[in-house]
Image (cartoon, rainbow, N blue to C red; front, side, top):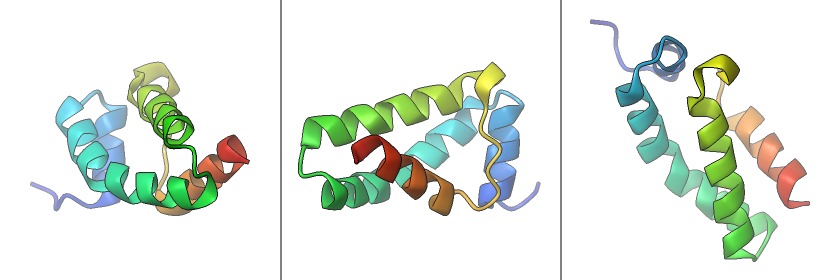
Length: 82
């Protein structure tokens, strides 16, 4: 079995593996939530933006293939919360 790297997890998610989604969510949600609150002090807006991001990421036909996930996600949050 391949090591659970971000690359592997995103690839698995693209193939429909919901366990990969759970690992990505549990790993990145707390970090992104904290970062989002630094950009916008509005907790509801931050949580809604993250919910939208993870929901979109989970939909197989719209999978985001991100090899270096944090930078694009941070940029997404900056755009949504600005």
